Structures are given as structure tokens and as C-alpha cells.
Amino acid sequence: MNLSIVIPLLNEEESLVELHDWIVRVMQDNGFSYEILFIDDGSTDASWSVIDTLSNSNTNVKGIRFQRNFGKSQALHAGFKAASGEVVITMDADLQDNPEEIPELYAMVLNEGYDLVSGWKKKRYDSVLFKNMPSKLFNWAARRTSGVRLNDFNCGLKAYRKEVIKTIEVSGEMHRYIPVLAKSAGFSNIGEKVVQHQARKYGKTKFGMERFTNGFLDLITIWFVSKFGKQPMHLFGALGAIMFIIGFGLALYLGIDKLFINKTGRLITDRPQFYIALTSMVMGTQLFLAGFLGELLTRSRKNQTRYTISDETTNKL
Image (cartoon, rainbow, N blue to C red):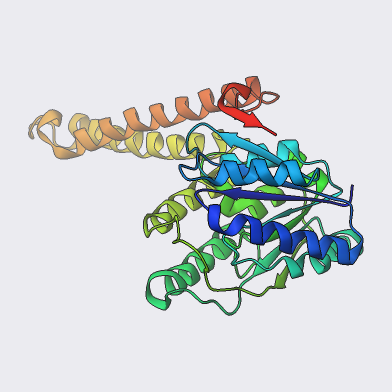
């Protein structure tokens, strides 16, 4: 199979038929063998009924339904697990991503050797104040922190080599950082393509301003995991050792000062430096132990899957 098209959605009943017809037309025009995977992330409208109808009329359409809303990352995880195409395309269900971009994305992965190609919505039709400016700030921070040189991390339109999506694990709200996860997994040939962004035709966006706050918190998480996730001792152990040495040195100074210099001066426990030294040594010891325990957990869970979706939570077509 040439293509698996994974489409996570939440309450998009109005756009699904139009999106399906558009994708099918592109697939037929280019002679692709394909499957369309609609991932219904707990919709409360008639989205699942529409997917059911589309599946009955087109055997290339498959659906996975969550009993409640788990989030876009979990929807993508389920779609990646079910995908079988040589190249996997992800796109949003709101018609803001253009299916006409798919053939060129497919060619960049298959013929030009990219592991992942991310769309770049260079010209956007969103609010400048509430979406464009925060998005630019977010992308700048993501580039500086991750080292992945993309202009638009959060574009839903992406193309992946099959091996990429079968290797990485998308959990929490890490869908924004799939290119970073791919790079950390050893897939370094990451490209970008300017894609057409279209104004929303139906409904309203499912993401509020909190996505940017969550995005920056997730950015810190992914930076830490990619840099120290496999060797937490390098961070916690180093910080712990530095703090313990500072505290021990200060305590040693206080002891020498009391024994040999200011013998008749005030008690060591009356001096604030004593409590600083004590706190530093205690915190340093705790940080060192945290790093040591982190190393043990990392080694013991190395071959375990961190996230799974139980089949009991989903319906499949």
C-alpha cells in the first residue's frame, strides 16, 4: 500500500464527507493505493455515523472511535499503530489542510529520502494576535531548544516513512514535537515543505489559548527527555554533587572558623551560613539519589512501552 492517511478529529461531522471526496479524488488522479484512517477522539456529534457511512461505501476507509476524548496525541498514536502504508500522511479534519499537497509530500519521502516532511503554513488565515504571533514565538522557542530547524512544528500536515511512526511513541500532548521525537529516535533526515493553509469552512477550532501554555511546558519536557531521559544521573547527579560540595565547603569553613579563629564568638547554630550549608548538603544528597533512582528506573523499563491504548476504549471499523 502506498499511503495511509491518518486523520484525528473531534466533532467535525460537517467536513468529513467533503474531505473524504477530496482525498479520494487526489488518490485516483495519482493512481495511489491507499487507506484513510479516521480517528474519532470522543466526538459528541454525528462524526462517527458519518465515518460509518463512508466506511460502508468505500472499503479504503477505516475508523477508530474513542469512548471519550483522549487528545490528539493519543489519536495519532492509535492511527500510527493501525497504519500499514509505505508512507503515512497526517492531516486535520477541518479542511484547513489541502489534500492536493499529498503527492508531493509522498514523493519527498519516497524519492528524496526524507524520513519526515513537515508542512509549513507560511501564509495563514488565523487571527494574528491570538494564533499567529503566539505560534511564531512557540516555533522560535522550539527551534532553539530542540535543534530541529522547522518553521512550523504544529502543522498537522506531515508525511512520514513507515519506520518512523512505528518507532516513536506519541503520548501526553507530544504531537507538537513529533519531529523532535523522530530526531531523538535516530531519524535525522527531516524536511519541510510550504503548504497551502485554508480558512476554516465549518465549525470552530477545538484549541484555545491554553495550548500555547501547554506547548511550552511540553517543550521543557521534551527537551529534558531528549537530553537527559536516558541518563538522568548526568543532570541530577551533577547538580547534587555541586550542591553537596558547596554545603560541605561552607560547613568546613564554619568549623575551622569556630575552632581556630573566633573561638569565643557566637555559636555556629546562630549563624545563617550554618543553615545554608545544611540545606545545601541535604538537597545535594536528595538530587544525587534522584539521579541514581532515575538511572535504575530507566534501565529496568528500557524495553517496556510507556503508553498503550486498551482495545476496550475503542471501537474499530
